[in-house]
Length: 440
Image 1: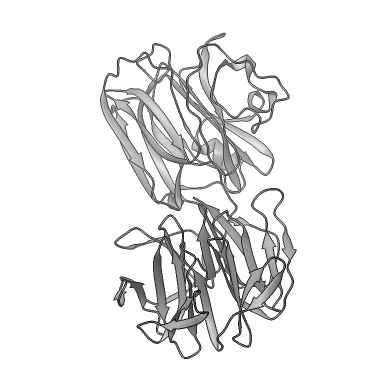
Image 2: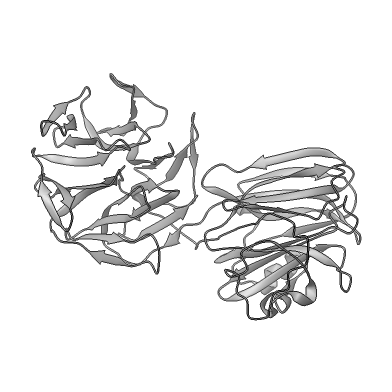
């Protein structure tokens, strides 16, 4: 799979997470347990919470949020809202997330097994934890379902049942699911909502009284990009296991491991321009248009010249466009390039046995096995295809998009230049050479 140029205006990354499963017996957390170590939902009392959550700055309403947080999100940041689910009476509430923050925990309370009585959301922003509490006050010694979030988790789906109030609620993240402590009677009308890729549920609105949540709405925000170390990036690729590869503006070549503290390790070679990684292969085009494949710790030159861009499909097939805009696929059996239909190609990307291409005037095409089908959209600059079939685009104005199957959904960020995707991660380089990651 492959990448192309890209840039972004970012806040910072926000992560959500959830967990599933109702415990038969309460699990007591010690004061020293971290968010990451408590990685399952827990039926606990308020006194059993770690101090970091009990001592969080309490935010009761948007007005307090505005005064307590320097850069709060506002209604203008909401992309769409799912709901309302529930009744029409009660006191309104809004849980507005802080910028430069992330959800670090959620708690769901149910006093009688058929009503969601309370909702707690903890956000972390610049090292400070803020806590919203909606609905019934927690009685001394009563239990609620508490879920601490892991890194890179986010809320992607909500479901439940509602009537004249909120009967049940399940939150699903990209890791797991968790819900209120229900008795199994399942009253109310079912509801469910799933966010598009590149977005997440990050805020909540609705109505409540002193006994329960009456109505709830879920605010969808586009996900924020995480700034990675490094700079002066030129092109980027993401392999099947999530390893990132990059060339910089001086032609140096780097690799970033999947786990551990993000850092770039310089690889042998120089004059790197375009780079691609997939199916346990890494290929590179240098500034002179020569083509290489990484073999162990050295670069083996492949036949061909005048290459401009390169990509690798999930089946291991290498595709290339040359400086004249012609399109080729490498035949490993005879070590030659087979010329394919099409012309005027500028950028090419492959994954999930699909091949997409942007031509010299920014039109977008998809390979149909025989020829190129013109797709919706225009002014394309770079394109990426993940092995899960996801397709990502930057245009000449630097706007970043995800393909929904029929149209392009605009994501957060701007000034996008080069883009790559695989292993549920999108990585990009902006026009200033800065490098970013989006987990989906």
